[in-house]
Every structure is written in structure tokens, then in C-alpha cells.
Image (cartoon, rainbow, N blue to C red; front, side, top):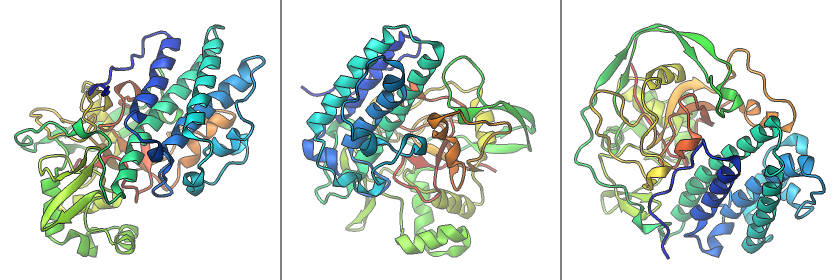
Length: 421
């Protein structure tokens, strides 16, 4: 039986036990097309094998919820804490990240048994009507798993891309074709004092708070994302060979890595092709450019005589816009051409949008106490902020205040460009 092409949305207003089951089952759904051999590959240090994602998200619930809060709970395996801890120093030692792909054991079958064991125990914990603080920790674990569901797809894409057979993860995922992207417009936003950051009663990560005021100058934001065709003009104009467009570290990276185009672009007999989750396809010039680093986004903006927006500018523009777009729930899992006219189209979904803002704490930010305080705060150095979600981000996981962050050289994530001036 083939899996459905559209995912049922995970609703935030449902019972916590049902929400837990929905999120956990979605991880299994995403792994449905994989062969056993696909689960164990680590194609580069930033990529984790799919088996590891399934085990690590399970370890999170076992470590932070079941062991401290479910009386009589016994861990599934005494060494899994070492194998599947990611970066939590307060929890203990961990297996080196670049060596995750060297582990043939535990087997895929054992990892799924681990998940079932922890899921049964979590249902027992949920039946005890846990205190609000424990419920908040469960929600953190669910959003943590949704982050790893996105990473599952980005990592699977990279794993398949290094295979000379260029296999398809799911052959039916090619995005629907559109006529032409909308004409780019420049939408103006008045300067002034604005309030940024999350407020409300639903879940949000600690790095989205506290609310604070920022002053912005007048600015303009492009009504749509930069397309493959527009980025190809940058390539054809020699953009990757002209250091004047690049930051110093970006230029050194281009030379060291010998970048000549975005990740997953391939030139075959004079024509450009792109690797997708559905395999190798001719490059669609009208789709948003994707899998570019911050260095490439910044260089393109400079070449075009524009700049990248700040995260404050992006959030102000997003505030009145409905949170909808080509997200994981659409089932395409590939960027689609825009068709917006009077507002920023594709502000949510399709690609994470690089900003020129460094990932830093908001004024008054205090990380949570204990090991979970390592979740976001410890990474506030040498990272750049991205906004808006991508075609593999779940709608129920995203907010207008959501701050994603990656190193400026990262390209395997679904990242793209919106211009500002």
C-alpha cells in the first residue's frame, strides 16, 4: 500500500495524548519509503542516519520525562543514553556525532521496539494527569521531534544525493507546475518602534522571548522569493568567480569547497538538473532557489544591488500575514513557484529565508534551568537566523516568531533568499 500524498495536519488543540501519538506516528510515516539499508547511512558529519533520529527523539522522552517522573520506569537499554544523546552536556557523555553512521547495532528493528516501549510508558505517564510543568516538557519533546522530522527529510535527501543511482525517496513528490512566478514587487514598511517576540499561551521555544522593542528605519521587502532563473543569472555573470560580492569567509569557503552552484544542482550535457526527494529532475527556473548558504544568499543580494532583511524586518512583515503556505502538510516537500500579487507570497513555507541577523539572545533572555536549558541558548554564537519555515516544516510546529538558526556555510537545509532594500 502506498502512503498518502497529503499529511493530515497535527492539531494543537487536541488532547495531549492524541497529539503525542500523532507526532510519533508521523516519524514512522516519513520513514515508510526507506529500505533497511537507508536507515544507517551518514553522508556527512551534519547528517544523521534516519535510525539515529528515531532513537534520539525517543531518548529525549525517556531521559527527560520517563526516568524522572514515571515511578518504577526501567530504561530500555543502559547504553542507549550514550549512543543517542546529541549535545546535552549535563546528561553525560555521548557517542561522537561524526561516527553515528558507523553503528550497525542497534538494528532498525530494535530501534522501533525501543520507540514502542517508550510510547507505552509515555501513555502511562499521560494517564496520570501530569502537572503543568511536565505537560510543558512533553510539548517540548513533541516539537523537538517535529524538528527532527524536518531533519529526517533533509538528511534523507542528502543521503540519496550522494548515491550515483540518484534514487527517489518518493517518486510522486514532484511539485505541481505553475505558469510563471509573480512579478516581483517592492512592498514598503514604515519605520518606527515595533514589538518583537512571542506572547501567548501556546508553545514557543525560549529563544523567541522575551518580547522587546526594536526601532526600524523605513524599508522595502520583495513580494516573493528569488527564483532559480534569477540565481542562474548570478552564476552566468561569474558570481562564483568574483570575490567582490563575497564576505571574506564566504569567499574562502567557495574556494575551499569549489562551489559553483547551489547544492543539488548538476550540469548534465549543458543543462541544469536538480536533485529532489523524487530523484533528479530538470531545473525549473520558476521555483524558489533552494539549498544556498548564507554566504551565497548574501553574495547574490550584493550582486543584485539589494540586501537580506533583518529578522526584525521579516517579523514585522509577517505579523498580519496568515500562517499558511507550502509546508510539510501540503505533501509536496519541494519549493513551488509563487503566484502572489499584493502581499509577500511564500512568506511561510517553501524555503527557510536567510536574514542578515546573527543568532543572539533577545534582551532579558534567560535559558531554562537544567539540561533542557542547553536546547537553544548554548548555540548563540557563529549562527545566522532564518525565518518562515520550509516545504518540510510542519504547520503545527511553526510560528511567526520562530527563530531557526544555522552556520553561514550550511546548505543541506531547505534554505533560500528574499531580498530587502
